[in-house]
Image 1 (tube, one colour):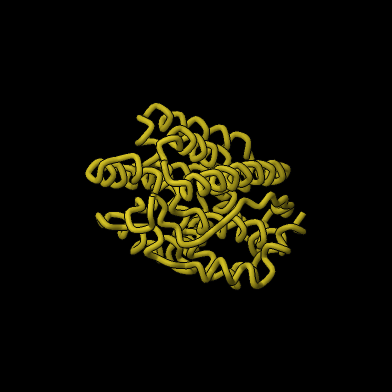
Image 2 (tube, helix red, strand yellow; image 1 turned 90 degrees about the vertical axis):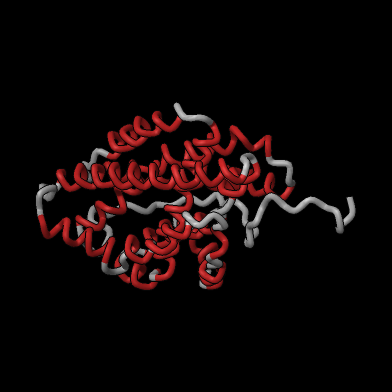
Length: 286
């Protein structure tokens, strides 16, 4: 097939990437974020979602990867699966360390896995739609954290910084893989309908279980009804750095028929992490 009549690539990724088999020792302090039990609980609740969530992502992509005909997309799927498997492993180990402070992280991981069982009951393409939507959700949250990484660095230990920023970087690198695979396996109309349904369904489910996890963690410290603790969490989410507020336009952009994750080109944030020695530091983070 000549260059003139070659089929267009099924991948629209703008950034080559590969899995990094890093090992971390983050989560060795009880109130590791600025000595604040509330914001620490917010991040720990996120971490409790990841082992089951990343496994679901891998399963949904693996189930339909055979339908991708583009070698570029197939190569990206391979690296996506490797990255997500490592994320699941490292967050599970992080959660085990956090549980050493008396937090029921194993219970929260199991709760997350039980919620994922609902997703596994859906058609394969809807499962992939959920993955694409959740990847969008985690990507825009990651984008926010990467943009304020100096503020984050000032409030956490170097080990915690490298752990969370590494995850944000890799979420950015592979942000279009599930999206491109879903697009390549569906008609334009079903692609859009699955996308929109998945975004609303996963936004509701993600935030419901996240807040439940946070409440459970705060309960260990007797703060589950503490208005100041919840106020600090809401301030972090909606005021500064305000990921939920900052991400609102990106969340809405998903609803545009012609949307693609790389329409927001944030390769510079990945490059900045690499230039500051992020890969070398993360390798030595353990």
